[in-house]
Image 1 (spheres, one colour):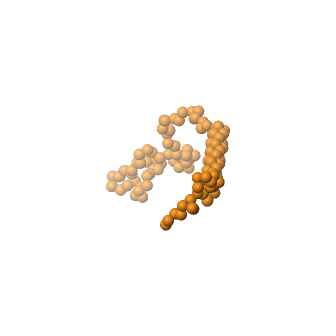
Image 2 (spheres, helix red, strand yellow):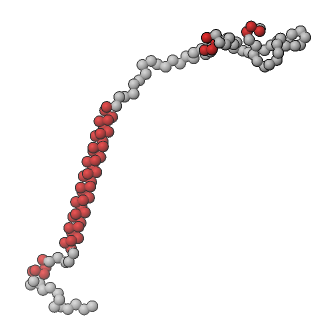
Image 3 (cartoon, helix red, strand yellow):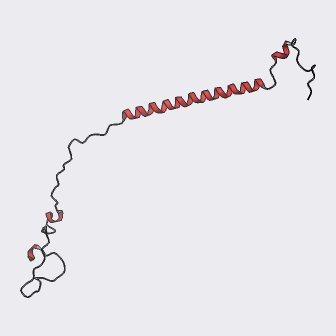
Amino acid sequence: MAVDPEDLPSPDAPEAAAVPPTGWRAHAVQRVQIGLIGLAAMVLLVGLANIIISNARQNQAQVVPEAAPTVAPQRTAAAVSDPLADVGVLPDLPEVPVLPTDGADGAADGPDTGDVPLPSQR
């Protein structure tokens, strides 16, 4: 494509040099708007983070710390008790079960039910 020398702007015409190419100003305004919107968004995000952090610090200051136990836990093993035997509903059972002994004739003292004999049957 050939360029006609008459279409080129002359160095004597100052008004031709002052006019920017078409659309350049619109793009510049759009870039400035996008930059300002981005800057405003960052300021809002930093402000929101500051509000959240200050609320968290206030809430943490109002929380009661966990109380330490006033009495040290006892490490001794307590004797195991049977509440029913203490009340008298069940008799006290020996630590080791007592098995029925064989008599002279080889028969057991009582019926062989597999139960532990009561203290009165000993």
